[in-house]
Image 1: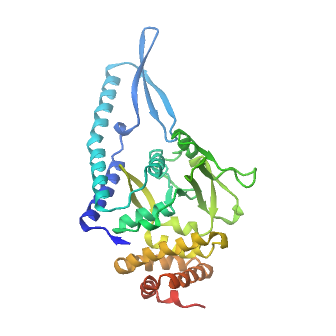
Image 2: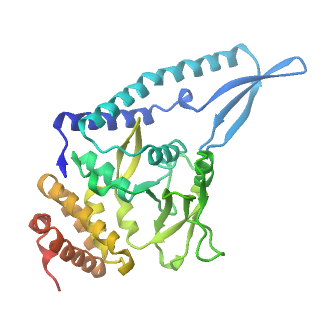
Length: 354
C-alpha cells in the first residue's frame, strides 16, 4: 500500500465533483439519441430516437414537422454540444490521475460498469461491491493497493425494493449486457427452476454477479428485482453493507460515477464474511481479511469516527454479528498485527472474546 500524492488526491476529488455535477445537469441534450423526420404521403413527421435505460433503441412520434419542433431539435443539438467540454475535462482528469498513481480499472471491466451506469442502474439503487468497490475506496482515501485488485468479477448489489423520485423508472441488466456484444451469457442456476443471477463470457474469467439482501421469506432462494429485470442472489449480511453508501469514481479512459459502500462498513463486513467462507474458499477468506486490514490501517489514522459509527450500526444487528466480526478480527490479528492494533485502539471491545 502506498500513499497517492496530495495533488493527485485533489484531482481525484475534482473528478468526483465533475461526475456528480454532470449527472445533476442531465437534460434533453444529454439524452442518447437524435431527432429524425419521415416523409409519409408528401408530409414530414418528426420522431425522436434514443437509447432507453435498458440499452434498446426506441423511436417516438413527436408530431408533424413545424417551426416549433425545428426549434426543439435545434435546442437539443445545442445542449448536446455543451456537454463536450465537461466530458473532455473528465477524460483529461482521468489521464492525470493514472499518471499520478491512482488505481485504474481495466478496459473490459470499465466498459461493463459504464454500460450499467448509462442504463441507470446506479440511479436505481445499484451498488458496486466486491473488489472493484475496494479499488474505488482506495482512490477515494488516497491510497494505492494494486496487489489486492486482480479480479474479473463484477459484483452488483441492490435491495429488492427502494423508493424513487421518479416512480416506475426501470432498467434491464440482461439487455444491457447483451447490447455490449461481449459474449455475456447467463450462468445456469444449480436448479433449472431458478433463473440465473450471474452472467459470464464463455472462455473468459469475466463474470457479473447480481446480489441482494437476504430475507427470511426468501429461504436463500433467488429474488427477482423487477426494476432491474433480473434475479439476484440473496446474501446474509448484505443489508448492512449497502444500507449506507457513498458516490465514488471508477477511473479508466473516462470517469464513471458509481455507488459504493462506506469504507468502514466495507471493512467490518469483510471481517464478518471471512467467517462464512468454507475450506474451498480459503483464498477468498484471506483476501477478505487483507482488504479489511488495508482499510482499517487508513481509517484508524484518519477517519476513526467512521469506524465507530459503522461499529455502532453493526452492534444493533445482534450478538451473532458481533461474534462474527470479533472472530474475523482474531484472524486479522494473526495476519496483520499492526493494523489489528490500530483497530483495537479505536474499538477496544472488538478484541474481547466472550
